[in-house]
Length: 383
Ligand SMILES: *Cc1c(COP(=O)(O)O)cnc(C)c1O
Image (cartoon, rainbow, N blue to C red):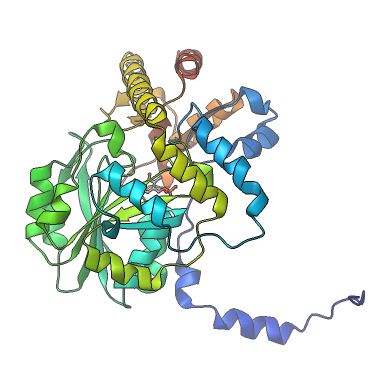
């Protein structure tokens, strides 16, 4: 039995403990994730079923039915530790990517875990990594605690393309990793193969091509892995493959690098249920095909409808979200997204993205029905 005595707090101990916290933890900018349905339902008094969630670039049609079935079948075994070598899943991912098992590493906290394994594999204190802004903010959130120093390149908003020279100029002797996100989150633009190869050839640093959304762009860069020693492609099952809640991501590279990364990767991070859901989703070709074609249809519909608002500057997207500048509505992104929340629509206020000012909103694709409701609500808000 635990004693039910009042706990005496020793202030001296608390002060000493605080002082032991690593300096970097005090200096870190918090990561701002997209908001959840439960959170919004509570805060804005809207019904959870009514919420249109366009904030986190998920698959709005739900997971593969085969994944649900596999999860249910595996529930009985959760008293046992999960797989650690992930053999079947690696083979299925290799098939899906036209590579071999030894080119594959799987992450159990999604691709976010792969970013962390990259940091553990490459980053000593004071090493530099390059990110063109604006891009995915999670890279620096993970790399900084390992002592990595961010050096920023530039993404051109005007024509939604990478400023290759800005990346080349940012390279130094200390550069260990360069993050190139294509399609880029949050802008939706792509990096051409020619641009990628220019950067790959200019350095020995590891080029991490983040292809979380590559299925929507219909562009594949895996051939670069055979061609160059310093290419790493990162992907996820959270977006088009409909498993954001199961947390499965993967990396593709040459077998030697993959072997190094396996030395440091968490051993049991992929749960039994995640493992089986991932495996069965990849086998469900019909689901994948449909998710891609429906996703592209929804994106093109949203783009055409959003373009009709003369108050919005809309960026062309190769992904499952669309970035827009709303300055001419007379509101900031923070104000505007709150107005949308009152009407049960969640979008991403991009104020926390470095490299963007306070007037940008990112909206993910919904089902066609959700898209139509979203556009109707926008018409009410923008008069
Ligand atoms: C969503 C996303 C990821 C990773 O997602 P996980 O859910 O951790 O797999 C990685 N990169 C970009 C650009 C993303 O948008």
